[in-house]
Length: 267
Image (cartoon, rainbow, N blue to C red; front, side, top):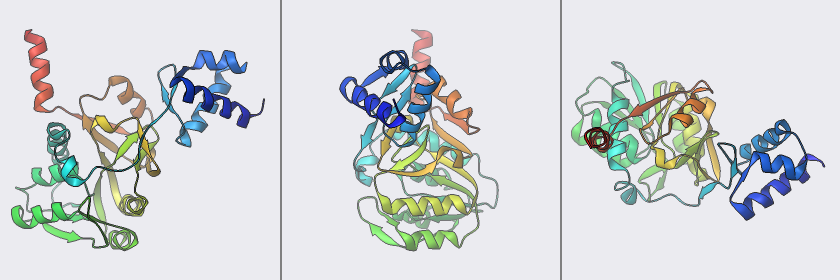
């Protein structure tokens, strides 16, 4: 059986069952574990499946991104913790890029007492916050307006970012996984890639609810990030897997997580 035939059978089984073990696939297709793992890695790279412990499953696919207003109410404690931790990693007099998003907005708020930074952003809400509540220098990218997310996207925004030398890019994601970060909006891809290209360090800010999901466009490969800052709900197994790809994982403990752990210890 040639690889494309195996891939078709694997996809048919996953579509039918949702989750299929590697052992079952080796028996059904009469091939070695090594062959199946190569097949699954190829299919995962294509975004067709997601590898899980001992097997493979259908990916949770994000077809569209929630609006900025909707996102402000989602995982707000985790975003606050991620932004607070990210703020502690920024050296004096840095030029940073804050990608559009509510987690990067949490980082902007955590930097309100700083006056030494240059903040580059494509996000109008972040820009408004910096204008009203910060003494940091700010550069807005301009570009094509994305009303739902209150940001600028497209080639004009990407070109503006490409003319700046950035120390740290803090990048957002609609969803992410072991392959990298995703977005359902093609016009955001060039902006994120431009920021990654001109930055000395690239950091993904994303809560764990977005992990193991995919969208149409792979914005950045996992290997393009130097570190990921996420919340304590990310499992230790996933953390070790990410770090095996030479990407640092920083865990931000939100107040709700601290409360749960304290209650568990005293319960």
